[in-house]
Amino acid sequence: MPGREADDPRTDTPDTHPVGPTLTTVGAVCAIGTVIAFVVGIAFMASSGVQVLIPPTGKDGLDWIRDVDEAGGTFFTGAWLLILGGVLGIPALLGFYEALRRVGSWLILAPILSAVGLTLVTISHLIPIAMAYELVPGYTAAETATKASLATTADTFAVLALVINYAGDVVLWGVAVPMYAIAVLKTSVLPRWIGWLGIGVGVFAGLGDALSPASSVIEGVTFIGFVAFFVWTAAMGVALLRRRSQAAPPRSIATPVP
Image 1: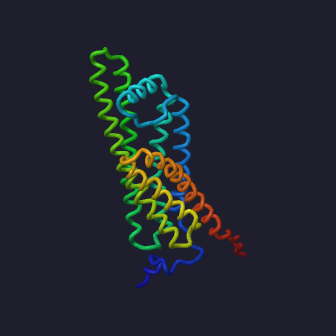
Image 2: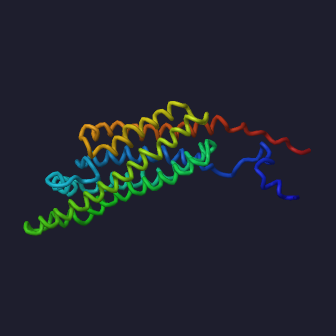
Image 3: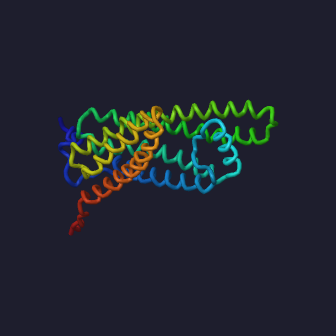
């Protein structure tokens, strides 16, 4: 029918290009932004004297409360940067799907599971931020008799955050990232070493995190996967941006009409 050719992608001419950045480009930029936000956020938190965002329980949890109380705004700056990194990660992984979806319809599960995993991780990070705003100053100013009750409340929130974080990490690192890695290995879109790196994330971070409750040794190995995940994310973003710049056709100079 007349007029339908414009809606059929098979009839697009080589000179027709989408207006604005593509989803893949946005995802690649967000991937790099995710890594930057996490690295800078962790640096801010470490410089404030707080080593972890999610507090431990018991005596170590009370030390976390003291450290956060003394840290001030530097801790909150780092903590909110981690939240920003988690939010940016969702469009990043959606952009990865856009670039790799030719591998098959099964890959649609990867961005869905990624969004679920990152949402859980972000919630687990918001809980200690809320604790830092309300529970920490309340505990510091409380009488001795009240502190025992507040310490129990702090332990409860800490365990809740740890459980939610555990679930999110297993879904993201153990399921979603390996799916992207397999897609990279099955296509020629990106270098194969990025795919193998993603497999390593699934083994060390995903499987390691899932088995970490069984052994403290396994829990220590997950740090390798944690670092590998951010290297993989940055590598995906950079590789997709380089692929876009190499694939971009040269701009033609219009011939003036006499």
